[in-house]
Length: 476
Image 1 (cartoon, rainbow, N blue to C red):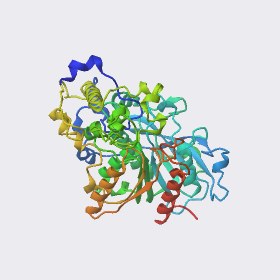
Image 2 (image 1 turned 90 degrees about the horizontal axis):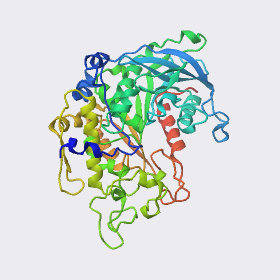
Image 3 (image 1 turned 180 degrees about the vertical axis):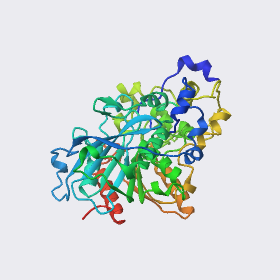
Image 4 (image 1 turned 30 degrees about the vertical axis):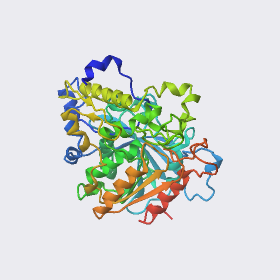
């Protein structure tokens, strides 16, 4: 099938799909003014390992002294430290970007504060310019994590990525990368990995002159990486780029990724993306939902992918749907794969140099039998993008925190990655949180989370703090 034949009929991927990613330089953009990316090969782990990363980080403004406000649930009477949070600027690929720097209100150790490099998850281009980067009493999700680490004596340094946040009425640059690559081509996460790498390279020399009474010295020998969802995916690329003795000065002591292990984009088009587009992906053979492929009549759905759709869907029974039909628009898995692939090819041709006249074809095989035969220019490069296939570089301590019922980052994929890392003699551990969703929370819907299911989020944060503290991180 040539995608141009179907271009006018494309349906775009439902919001909420979490993508993988990479980057171009300022000179590349100038040389190819009509394309954001000069070559798809520049996004591969091999190419990213050949790049030099740097940034000058400048603390721009004081932001707030509490990420959780007066939230009674998180008042933490036994908390050890207060903290202050600031906004900083830096440049990545020539683009002005922002980061949040949250610092415990205590005298730092001699070598600087131990710290967490936090890579946040998907925000979306509509919300990105106003994003608080993980510290906002009105939006408690990441605020709880920032608050807990800072009160435990860890600084939290969180780059916002290109297009995220506004400081002193000036929006971050680079939102065009989100518009071009975030939902269709699935390349935005690698751009975010590059932004995180450039930011990390500047941490040892932060300019905090505007706030002379506050120390911005951080101990690069006591730093830890945490990433969620899209940030976990970016984190896996981050670790692959600096791993196995390469750019050791940027290597964390221990990394923790949650809901952040994703298949490469081409595999995801068949094994994950249809979950966002068609009910067939999670229904049994009789067309009903029961969490399995086998229907009450004994018929099996050969295109079944995963038994639990996202819980925001409210009910997995299509006969009860109203607004849900606006997201799940495709009649079956094959149609969803076709639409998603067409969308990806359109975006790649529009924004990447050298990818004109792309084409693909679909087989008549059942799910998981290689449904899409991709254009050779795509098939040869995409498996090299992202860290999932690069266990040979993941030689440092890594923990994967996985919610049990998350189709975005399934337990089997996390287990496979951990097994491959351990087979290479490195350390990887897997922690599963029963009946939790992608946000590491118990769902309000009993079809997803049975009664008495525990929220995994605070448990996970406590687990991370305890693990990191074993290395001397945190302040007594």
